[in-house]
Image 1 (cartoon, rainbow, N blue to C red):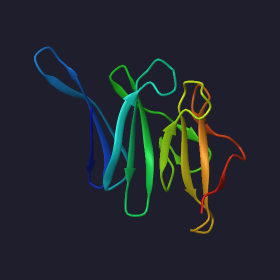
Image 2 (spheres, rainbow, N blue to C red; image 1 turned 180 degrees about the horizontal axis):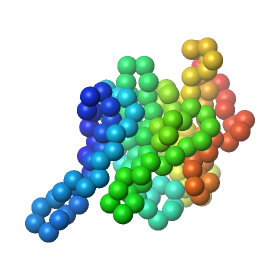
Image 3 (cartoon, helix red, strand yellow; image 1 turned 90 degrees about the vertical axis):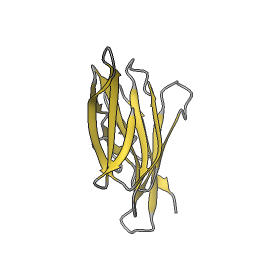
Image 4 (spheres, rainbow, N blue to C red; image 1 turned 180 degrees about the vertical axis):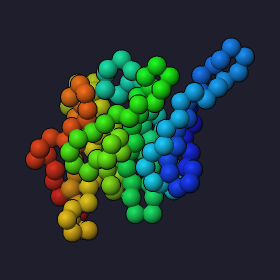
Length: 142
């Protein structure tokens, strides 16, 4: 598994052993970024598949992109609500943590408010299909 910045976008590549050598068989592009802060692979939502999480940052943005490895293909792990675009969570940062002790990691991110300095913290929880922001769970994060 590799993560890199290519043309100011996050890029993830996954290689598998192909008998005599490794071959890159899955590639996905993510959010705009100019640096990678962390990368990890694990079954974060207890669905039996390995997910790849990459924390990234850019000039004025930071977030977390999430993919699942499904039959040697990278599939976006989608989110709904809050400041999520496809599989990219957070606008000013995001992290994974098991906040409620159920062995499923939640995503907590900071979203820009309607006025630049009014930011909101949002938590997305796995509902079996998508990471969904709980209605009304945002709080100011000045």
